[in-house]
Amino acid sequence: MITSDYIQLMARYNRWQNESLYAAAGALNDEARRENRGAFFRSVHETLCHVLWADKIWMSRFTDYPAPVGGIPSSTALHVDWAPLCDDRRTTDEAILDWAAGVTDDHVKEDLTWFSGAAGCDLSRPKWLLFTHFFNHQTHHRGQVHAMLTSVGAKPDDTDIPFMPGL
Image (tube, rainbow, N blue to C red; front, top):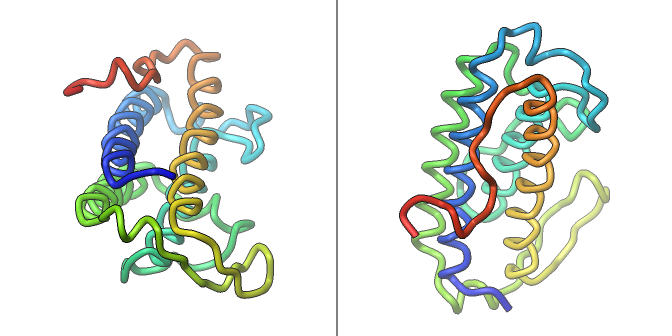
């Protein structure tokens, strides 16, 4: 079972890694960010849009955070332009940090019931499992972005948690 300390650590890790990837991606031109590089969500831009969309949908389930429009297929078009994507990412990361600061160990033990568009029905799962999925999903797709960026010579930061500044 995970703890509130884990949630807070992963929220800080999420922001650190997003800052790194967005800085590295920001050094590319828009064409390079949008080029189909064979990833599941094709490009750096589309994958970053999907991760942000998913973070927002989960935050809307965990809190009163506004849910994004559309579903997984349209998640890659959350933001057409780079600057609004960057701004929304920073805002959402701050919301994740604020949420994480309020999570208690008792909260982690509760269940959550929500309607899953992907499954097409209501689901109920332990929050500790959903919180783990939330952070795992981010890490999974950021790994894809990291690979796309390094393949074109961009230099994101290390991804190892023990090397995160401030530990």
